[in-house]
Image (cartoon, rainbow, N blue to C red; front, side, top):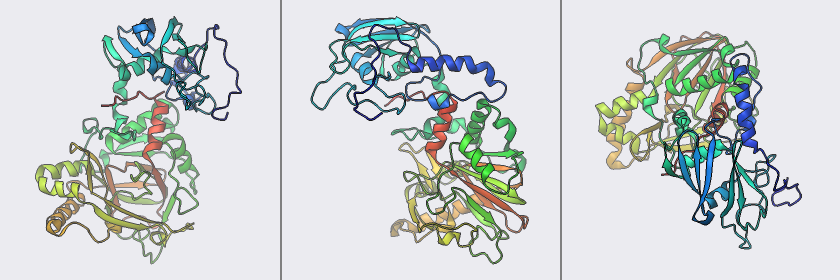
Length: 487
């Protein structure tokens, strides 16, 4: 359906209609008993801005105020809100305003027009229906006599963000369930990761890491979501009993279906990388007998931001990985040496990666040259000083551009950071073998490799998941997205 086209059927104005997102709520409720067993047939493709991640409360009353310029809506949970009629008109997601196939707004049915024929958003009538309200507009130049329907879930969810509270609690209880995900929405003003929802760690031995079973993860949406939440809470999850495969099919199937999709590398045909030992390797990544210092992954940054997840599948052999909780190190550095913390959080760490030259020892063919230069602080914070991410890779560091007056102090802080991330207090050695997959929060956890311990036949395949892919998958699994308030 092309934008702006007028060739489509218009629903009769007098016939009661069930709004699409109301029907989806009923579908999800009917499916819940099935979800406890085998993986249920997915309805995730239907999740969008019109779908509330809950099925109750019901709308129980709707009354016009100020000659229909506002509408007061009450719900069965005891809450009540006042909404602007103009907001309702502008927010309408009915299939005569938004294409159910393309997900695009029809430009001849929106609340305004380039010719100045704008809707005033005044409500002529509002009726409580089985699942929400049906609104008739007063002198709407685009819709005329066409009614608009708003489901109870849609109204309750958005009222908490854009409405004036008249009675009861502002937010639905489901709002709290989305707090773990808020930092990864990519929205303007998104909060930093909430460290109170994360378990920071030091070196307590390799047995301290979380493990999940592959077959349990793929058995249900609930288990899939729990895996994603566990990665963000603990920073590291090791998946056991991965199906064995000599190629990337298992890796790609898992990442694409259960984590949000593998990021495509533009400098090679395959989305994933392959690392296996090469005699006389020049790149430290392929020289498995040598130590690889702890670092975060330098993926191609979407919107200038490194990928959120790093995923490594062990195809053959055993490797001895080193893992460090960068948030724990940063917090310790802030406490022990505030000046060093401030320097590493203020001045950029210059890095450059040539995606062709750095893969000189790879078995994969490059497709095009690509030179990626970055200059972000090692410790990245928000405007209030809260931790957002760490970003560090010594292998690709280039000459520093820290000012003359600050360089010696910055270099001292840089050395202290390196000592902490490679010292016994924070660095954990974890052996991982064929049939296991390592999933890391790449904004938080630094990883490396112990020297001289990996088996000669070690072969790993992996790649990254960007923030947007991860967030999209989580929202689908949660049945919708509860919009945050704008401050």
